[in-house]
Amino acid sequence: DVKVTQSSRYLVKRTGEKVFLECVQDMDHENMFWYRQDPGLGLRLIYFSYDVKMKEKGDIPEGYSVSREKKERFSLILESASTNQTSMYLCASQLGSGTGTDTQYFGPGTRLTVL
Amino acid sequence: QKEVEQNSGPLSVPEGAIASLNCTYSDRGSQSFFWYRQYSGKSPELIMFIYSNGDKEDGRFTAQLNKASQYVSLLIRDSQPSDSATYLCAVNMKARGGADGLTFGKGTHLIIQP
View (cartoon, each protein chain N blue to C red):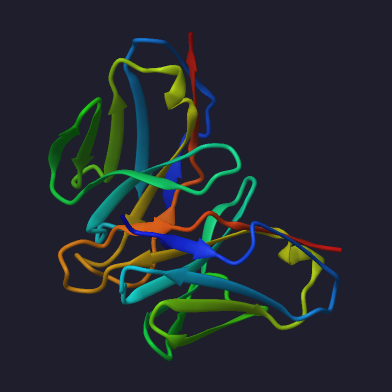
């Protein structure tokens, strides 16, 4: 079974802090994604990565950056947290392009509160 | 702008009946379609995916795709209280293996009444 883990289930930070959210997958997947989920807005793509050190902006990248130094790990960084970044953050992984399947598997999520 | 539309519900269905969930999408270039189930406070889990027009069955679940009309649906037969959840429709723009993320609908809240 695919396993995607996230470093924290719940996180409380203060405005202006630098925040790191970590995601690890154990299935040698090429592609990894960060989404945020908000009531009434649904799931929205922040960034994704299709290889080590490669990244692409999603629909709402403003205020975020990412890092992928190793294949199994994809980090989301909030450079200076703001209250409007309070949300549920979901990481997902995908086997890879040309594999015949593009199913994405989700981690358990991190509920971030910025005070 | 890629859009995926779902009726937010709640959709209330008696136990044992068929639940029908619908989804429309705006981009004719869409190639892959997914249904995820999400329980409150949990992350989405995959139920089914479908790539080709027609029906695809897996146990009590049937996904239906009509690319000409740009809609995809999910039927749940013999609905159980444990099926009560929010169902998310997701669309991937690229053909198989595309790495540009999924566009999600906002989900339909399904309630199965015992």
